[in-house]
Length: 116
Image (cartoon, rainbow, N blue to C red; front, side, top):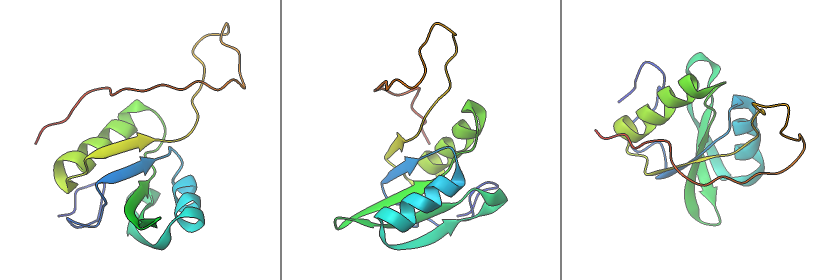
């Protein structure tokens, strides 16, 4: 069932969704790494795709800029489309001048869990 932000149907998304901020990065990931990728969302230019990677169904969808936009898409993917895992892929800005840029940082965890 479509939502105001995602025009897909139940089953269009895989259990695992990779989420870059930039929708064009989502398109690039789908075209470069997924086999048989098909577009499953295009509302407001926020592109989403589902295909397979090494035989496993995987989706990739942009979430836009900032936590508010990310929160809208992750909430709808989990509660309305049954997505089980969301993996954020991409970069982030530094919040302090003391943080050196161009360094890799790896973070693991979850902000919160949505329940339907």
